[in-house]
Image (cartoon, rainbow, N blue to C red):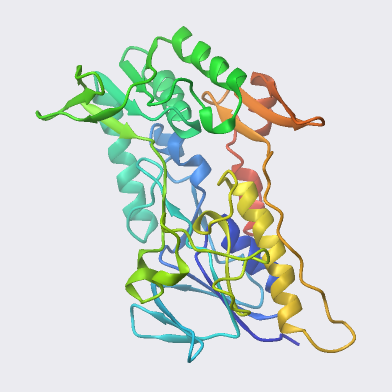
Length: 367
């Protein structure tokens, strides 16, 4: 017997994990504006290589056995009536609602539109622009910027590529100087011009950019890998601004509940838990939230579950591919240190397939 209505808003890594975890114990409705799951980890390569164009798109149709997926845009959570309101006017009643709307990433790691065809057209356009560009500027030396620079370099060995980073070392968000040096060595050995301590802004003329020292950079194509924005504007517009911090993230307690409410949760990139916002973290949060939702729905009787606190993951493995056959892997080891492993580990763990077979299995498909 399924116990309670659970609405999961957002079908990203955390949303699909949580929906699947609860599919056997509650009536689950997953709401997403896209008709398919977007495997964002494969998006940078899809924006460069034609044969990867549709790889990031995995249908939702095998995700849930008992629940359902609704393609639509949530515009409000009516906590009085306990209903999620969609842009179509439809109202979905809930016993528990989970906000898993993630964050908005800069192109080419974005899914634009709602259908596979619409998104594929944007990736094809990026591929064509990259194939024709003489000089590509990438702004941002975090994992995304480094990975994109490597993908473009391997696809366009003759093009000029500049990676500009405002910090003094690449991959500074990882806290590993060794990782930054390893990335810098790889990029420079592949003729990528790396500019550190270089804050970039658009110049006065088309296709020009200016660094913090006033120097002009001319490039016919640019990508900005300078961070993400939580997808919470809809909550502010709906009158739930008090749920958000100054950065637009949803404030949650140690059980991943919103605003002290027992029946509203938030998981993944969208919340204010202080940790590296990557897919394994979203999945870990989804597992704790699923347990706590089961505890809430079945809070009486002898099988009552106690809720669990979520403990932020301060040291998590991170893999940065340099194309399909190289990269680096940061692996936490006992004692507080982080081991930086080379190409073979990174290739086997992520770089070759970008974890696509794993995610296809998560959605009920064969690898």
